[in-house]
Image (tube, rainbow, N blue to C red; front, side):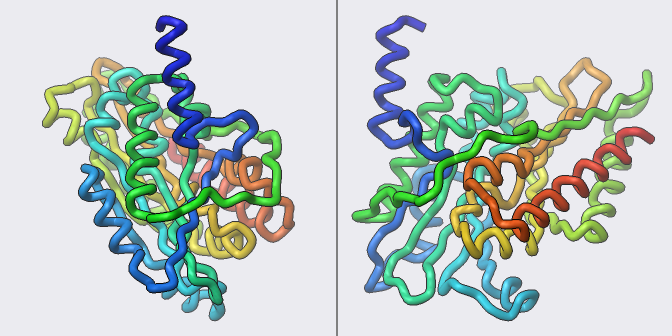
Length: 312
């Protein structure tokens, strides 16, 4: 890439708030909402109009109240989205795009306030986690569209300043696993058996399957046939998001967690990966023991599930 073009892209990232030196990985946009006209539905509609696929827009207050009795929010939704053509463009060269397909956001209003906030990951943060250059033109365009849509959905919004500084991650940003198929094995049978076993492990380990996307269906519709399959699970742990959101409502930028599983054509492996909780801890500068304990417990459980199933 020519120096001028690279400089132009980096300038665009800075001007849109997607990349600035020393910024936080999680951006919070907060808009005045005394009249209540901005809702989780109007935000969803803005993304639909911009061409995004809405994976889920889940009201978390009922499960919070059911499991924990008290809530500190009048609104708390986990919002998951992706744009099919943008994901396809990236998937051709970067299989890790499933880590944020869908990407997650939290939409919330704290009790006693007349505002509404949306948290999302910066492009630079997603790029680092996925291992994609931050100046990749497809990723930059994708990030700009997200930012423009949020700006349209949240009139007069401002970027919220947080009191904490990010910490250095103490573990890998992505947790990975690989299942090697025997020579001559039917990949569809292996996939179905593995996914049935995987899904069966979730409830007993306090996980909920909050969504499922067959990305390869869209890839094949667009005449791209680089994979035999590419599936993404949206995985949620109610206790994790409830406990962490008490101090960090913006944690919804990481929840639900996207866990990809794919097989590239002409290979005999099923590749898996999900963003680790070290992203939460470092990006949000989490220090309280309760939050760290529940996050690390979830990390250990998911690692154990994948290790057990891929070592059989």
